[in-house]
Structures are given as C-alpha cells and as structure tokens.
Image (cartoon, rainbow, N blue to C red; front, side, top):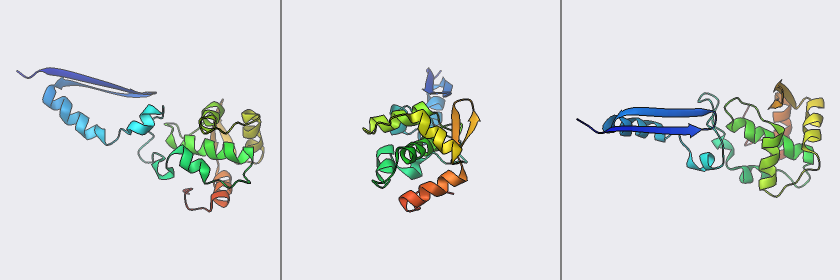
Length: 155
C-alpha cells in the first residue's frame, strides 16, 4: 500500500488541497505547479481568472510603474497602480489601500490616495464595482496607454 500524502496550498482567497496516495499527489502538484508563481505568491498576490490573464504581461510592479513619465501626476500613478493590482486580482478590481501599498513599496508616497481615486472616478477613468473596490475603465486604460506609449496596456 502506498503512503498517503496531503498537500494544502492557501493562496489568499483561493486554495488547493490534494489528498491521496503519494504518487497521485505528486502528479497533481506537477499539473498545478505551472499555475503557481512563487514571486507573486511571496508578494501576496493571488492568481486571477485564467481567461482574463494574470497580469504577467505587465511585468513586475516596479518595472511597470517606472514606465510612467516623470510628468505623471499622483492621480496617474494611483491609476497605474490600481490597474496593475486589478490585473493580478481574482475579482478583476483593486482597493485604494492595495494600490497605495504597492506605490509605497516603490518609495512613492501619495498625499491622499483616496482623493486620487475620487478624481479618477470623477474623470470616469475608474468605476466602483462594490464598496471599496474599483475597476479601471476603458477611458482609464486609454489614458494609461497615452502615458506609457501604449505598448503594455492591453485592450
């Protein structure tokens, strides 16, 4: 009789648990290994819906945010951070605190992150999907494309 094995992975709001004989568990782990990105898991990101993309096309947050021109405003930086977080989130949305935290990790301090999101709401560059969660609109994506030259912001 084979040894029984169990593996449980917790990826934020999502998780995976496999239990069975050791060979089966190893086989399942090999199948799902490609879905697990150690860099984003360590950073606290969660994988997104497979059909939407996982945000890997944007690169790391530091690389992405450095593509903004030096003339970008705090509102522009918050919009870009929100877009990056949104692309990596399971619900295709971002919270002000998440985007602000990413900016702070890069040494970018915003005077009032909530006000930046409110200004983007007024300009219709983001819209609320539920209380405290926002999504970058097509207008917001178009604005980001203009800022960074268009090549890295998907439709």
